[in-house]
Image (cartoon, rainbow, N blue to C red; front, side, top):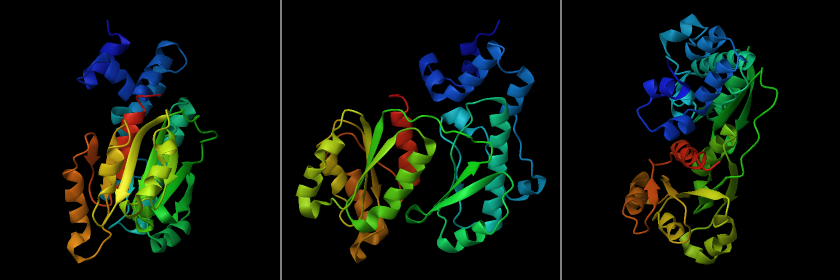
Length: 293
């Protein structure tokens, strides 16, 4: 006879504790079935979701189960796509979320498109979405879509992530991280901007925010010399995620110089994502802090 844990174990080769935490949505759905709160046929729909737009399959193969597997939802990387492609993908993702909401209360994940410039947003704003509405975060170049069936959002846990920038020009990467985290409803987000090493008093002034007991992770975005993550790493007891940005003069090589500095950090506990990859930093931070509750 299969137990709840053995079912999860078929899909995840990890400890029972890790499996439960990493697949909390899956556990919630299976528990609702076991308690008679959800029909098995309805649960099966959630696990076998396919795109309702058949023509969408000509250019996209959506991963509707990603949040069930890894705990973080799929996002649309809009750069290089047409506005129509982005719109149809977002609408299909909202359709799937509406289907899930009809059968269970656990499917309230973020629907995001990253790297959306103002020109693309203008085209998206003219598209007739059938399954949700969109908001635009210009500083982050992110479109967030709320499925029409979403009536209330889950409560935020007490855990916090602090997003720090070395300079004002690092804000786009930082906002991509901050807005992504806020959309997941997985933590509170605090921002500390323009606190680079040229004026160390600025980051020291932010120490109460950085070292608050509820902070589970710090994201630091920096271009030019990329030194700030090492400084922050020497001040806090939580993981630091360094985001090199493409800001700087010639020898910065579009962020490569900052990235190499961060990779060679002498502060233990500093991890590095790709240049300007605020979304990747948010995904990593989310996986850190969601285990803290």
